[in-house]
Amino acid sequence: MNSQKGFLFTLGIIFFASTLIFYAQGFYESTQNLERKVISSSTPLNIIQLNEDLAFDLLNIFNLSFDVNSLNNSVKIIGESSFDYSEVDSINSFYSFLNSTYFLRSTYSKTLDLSNLLDGSAEFFLGSNTRFDYNYSDSIVLYSTNSSPLNQVDLIIKTNGVLSSYEWIESINPVNENNFSISINYSDDSNIIVINKSVDNNSLSYLNLIYPDGNFLIKLGSVSVGGIDYNGVISIKPNSSQLIEYELDSSYKRAYLYPVLINSILSVSSDKFDSNSFIKLFK
Amino acid sequence: MILRRSSRKGFIITVDSFLGLTLMAVFMMLSLVYLSLVSLDSWNSIDLKDSCSDLVSILEKEGVIDRALLSSSSEEASFFINSTPQSSCFELVVFDSLGDSVIHAIKTGCVKNSSSVFSVERSIVLNDEEINFFIVRVNGWFK
Image (cartoon, rainbow over the protein chains, first blue to last red):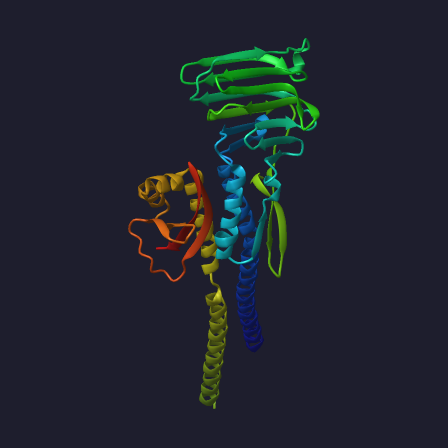
């Protein structure tokens, strides 16, 4: 009876000890597998970080700053317009810096296709239907390709020039639903202009700021972009030598503005993967 | 006769317990060998790499590096680096497009003597009157 008990006890101990080894080995192997997974998954993360780094650099080249708030369907764009600045030269310099210095400092083959930004315009895609066209030394245009109506626009303009005169022409829709609120705050060395109105999404309203050497035209509502008429457009076109700083905050009634992409493609490849993606400002 | 049987029993019990203890010790040793092979170094490295990435992004996006380059001073960058968690050390180096170091800052109280140092680099576009390109590197290691 006692020897049977002892035998069972020994078997129990052997079983317990084997389980201990089995679990220790399992823990070791699972940790190793998990570690391998984490290390391999950090490669796509590097590409996302590189993409985000290059997006921020491109914004700096264009002197632009973006802030998108999807909850309010709104986007805030801060920038400046100057005729002295050549975006194309800066993009070419950036391209040679990337290929001769930056991309050579790390592994993987990398290329950034900037050819779409060398045609005189940089296109930013906000969500699937909204676009921001930054036309070098010409104009900036924010519009929705499916004519999503604007809800509110706040525009702050600062310049060091001296205004000769200005002209404000407004179109108001009798159906209040088609109108949007516009707030323009203009200031220069000696003038301040404040406009708070409600204007039509489907017809043209504009503010023309006239300087001794040219003008600065802000169009709102129905505007032709590339030969096609769109509603709910904001277009800012400087034609004078003044350096003009603008802060454009616009919200839409129906729009989802994520992701924000720049019309430029980053390619990263190795013998294990091949990644091509638009430069992304916001996910 | 009774005495002889008892002493044999005692001997068998001793041998049995000795074998049992030895077997148990072998099993325990094997388990400990496996457990000692588990290394968390790469997890720590990934944490450190993320910290370096976050720090370099913040330094660029907050304009700290731009201001450091424009003023040729690393004072503000040092302030940022010093406010990072106690357990980690960071070093900031900004290189110009020729690869020369133009800005350098290291966290106060940190000496770079760790065997595992992680580095993250970002490109910088400084658009002020004329456009210039730089590379910023943040090195990180545990104290």
